[in-house]
Length: 113
Length: 112
Image 1 (tube, chains in turn orange, purple):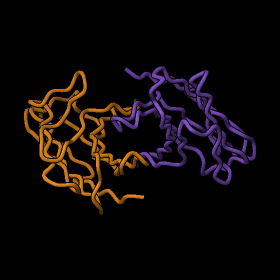
Image 2 (spheres, rainbow over the protein chains, first blue to last red):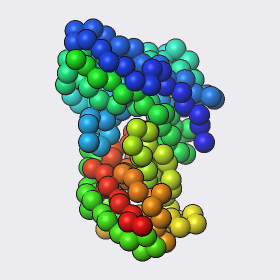
Image 3 (cartoon, rainbow over the protein chains, first blue to last red):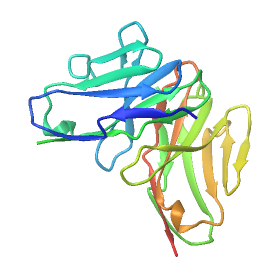
Image 4 (cartoon, chains in turn brown, red):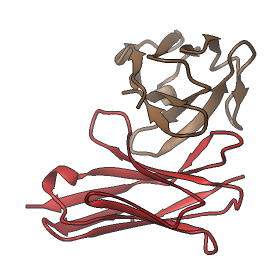
């Protein structure tokens, strides 16, 4: 399995501000993904973080709201921009080692007030 | 695109009984089907997965079956224990993309 570290584990933020979430993996991985889990709901894919190029966003998610970086094969960041209470969710980083298994970090629990 | 439906949304069993959670998928190109267990305040933990080239996989008390023709797969937990109580998610993915599409989740309660 892959060891995935996410920071911060939780945060309470003021509306209108931005938060950057970090995802660090203990080894190089082919693919990294960012998911959102709204309270009591299932997981929804936000985007695929591509190493060395722009992220690929799913329908309903845009780069201006959720800018993503992936400078190398072990690290990625997700920024939640101009936050509103509706952005309160758990944000999860996931990695897939060459289409074999998909693992998740512990997530970042975000509350926007 | 892929759509994954999961049933039931809640499931309550007595300790020692079996629990079965079922999922259906829509995209015939999907070929990877993982199951996750999520405990309160934690990220999803991969508990078992199956690929489309096999029909069944077992790991101790947990098993997963896949019917490609009918596009459904199921999680079977035998001899349930209170520690099995959690939310379980199924997912489907195509190896071409690696993206996971999740079911709605099943809250399993195992009563002592």
